[in-house]
Length: 111
Length: 117
Image (tube, rainbow over all chains, first blue to last red; front, top):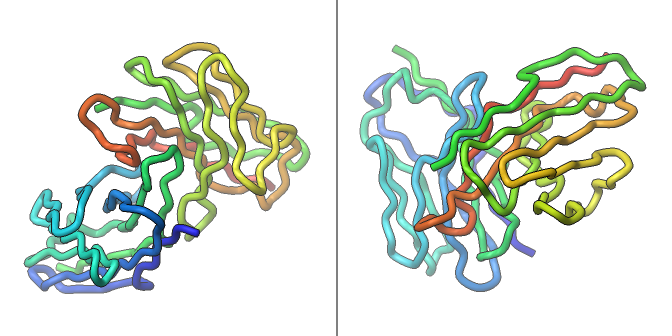
């Protein structure tokens, strides 16, 4: 079945550090891939998406590239800020009504 | 995009009682989704609610425990019945973006955090 695996957290970084959160997936067909972010006390928000191989999604300084050969969609940001502290979820959808979410990775950014 | 309002935002409930969560969307949508997020866990889809028909439940979730109503294209309710401490979770209402959006591009309410004592 379809699944998403992302690196365990928490990840703790200093402000302006480089961020990578790994995400790999297993899916039949050609899924769309997503990163969602959940700030403390809030619901999830779509951060970025990619719908086909080699697409790069980007938003708010975050980027992720859809790598079909490695079935990966790693999230990166060159310089994190304290305000980026949140839980990040990788997710996939193969075109139906069910979106599969990874376990989430909690990021703490220290000033 | 869609703006989703959920009520209540949080509640503390007694074992054996039931609670209904309301979800209001600012536009008409075909499908509404209810997710559960247990403490420190990821999201699990409970059911998909389509206006005018019975909700479709995922494996492990049943209508008697989580009855859902979908009376129109902008509103849905989820009831958590006969609650136990294991039901302590955040319950999230969600819709797809529609239009130029892709399947899986979801908008979420802020969630309803339930604590069952």
